[in-house]
Image 1: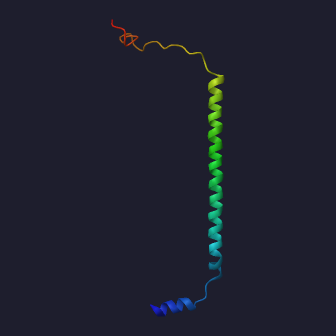
Image 2 (image 1 turned 60 degrees about the vertical axis):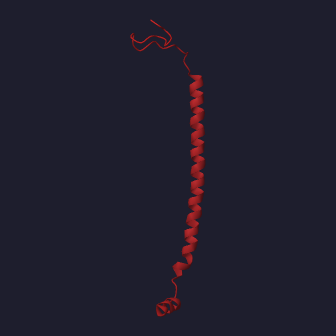
Length: 82
C-alpha cells in the first residue's frame, strides 16, 4: 500500500485538475444565482396572479342572489317543522 501511495504522490497531476475546483465553484455560484432569480420570478408571478384575481373579483362581481333548494323534499330551513 505504501508503494502505491508513493507512486501516486510522485505522479504528475493533470493540468485540468487544477482548474476543476474553480469550474465547480463557478457552476455552484451560477446555480445559486439562478435559484434566487427563480424565487423572485415565482413570487412576482404569485403577486400578479393574486392582484389580478382581486381586481377581477371586485370589478366583475355580480349581485348576490339567494339559491333555491335543490329538491322539494328537503325543507327550506332546518328550523322548519313541517
